[in-house]
Amino acid sequence: MADPQPTPQPHPQPNALDPTAGSLEERLPVMAAIRATAHGSVDTPAGRYFATAAGVRAALADVDRFVGSFIDTTALPADEVMLSAVPEPEHGRLRKVVNSVVAHHRLAPAEPFIRTKAAELVAAAVAAAADGSPVDLVAAVSDPLPSAVIAHMLGVPQADRERFQIWSDELLDAQQDRRARTLSQAHPEFAAYIQRLIDDRRAADDPPDDIVTRLLQTAYDDGTLLSDAAVRTQTMFLIVAGNETTRNLVANCLHTLAAHPDIYAAVRADPALLPALVEESLRLDAPVQILARAVRAPTEVAGCPLAAGDRVVLGIASANRDESVYADPDVLRLDRANPRDHLAFGTGPHVCPGASLARLETLAILQELCARAEKVQLAPDFAPEPGTVFWAHGQRRLPCLITPADPC
Image (cartoon, rainbow, N blue to C red):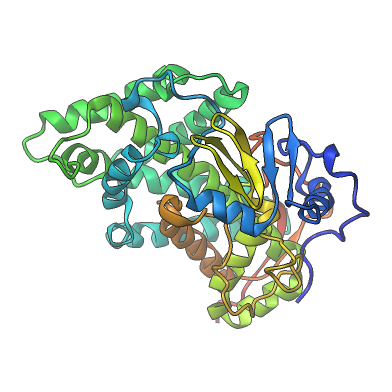
């Protein structure tokens, strides 16, 4: 199977790494150099960077000694800290509530909408390309689907879909300076919209069975319900996290297929290979490239001692290409024995709660594309345009030429 990534260049010195700068292609050889060091880690301005799968797994699994955030959230009100930055044991209590709201079994009612919307978006993209003009598959497909799905799961009009997409981008941009602010402080308009949903559901005799209602009605183990501030914060967190990561996953998969006709031909001939393609895309083009953690108590990772208060950066993208774990680590292979054996969604007790939804949305798009398009190719003038979110990896434009499939 063809290699969807450029051939790595000679290794630069490990201390040249800035884990928040440069394209993935520029970082790949540096990651490999760090994996080859004694502890598979190096000090960076953002904290101790761990590059090996063993080191990243160990830190992700040790949820009692590490808490995740790129900013210091200790001064924020406890009810307004997003799930990923809530420390244990409170994290575990809150996660049970969130998991019950977006768990895999909750996706069944949403799946018909997801598949219908995916079919609608792909059909429109293929039709727009029928005259030979390139179509931007990011704008046409990967951007609108996640925001449409979250609007559906929130029980709000589809007309508000674009607002979620815009607000998500604005909130992520507002967080780029890494100042300690609540989500409501960072984007008051977004917060006010979610608060109106909360108020409407609290006032309703028979509120709709949607994300906000479930968060309002699902209690902690001790019977305590979430406050409005907690419901607002976690709803905003789910919207933003789901939008950014899922649209990048979809766009990265589409880029791989458009850049590698042999891979597209293989999955089109055998759509049963599509789940493996999604997992390999997650491994090679992880939508979340790095995760930040603060050390809560003295510990060590991969033989490297860490003190309370230290900051660490977990190299998800690097761990997913660890030569000691993956054969042909830089090659997209559809025949891996354990295709989900990667860290794109994290691992351990704090694994991404939206992983099932992201996979479902991505597969819905890819299945529709394979059914409707004989060929998908990058437009001749295509040039990568990476996003501006420092921890993310995805395409912001993907102009493609599409050959419709024979309707027979």
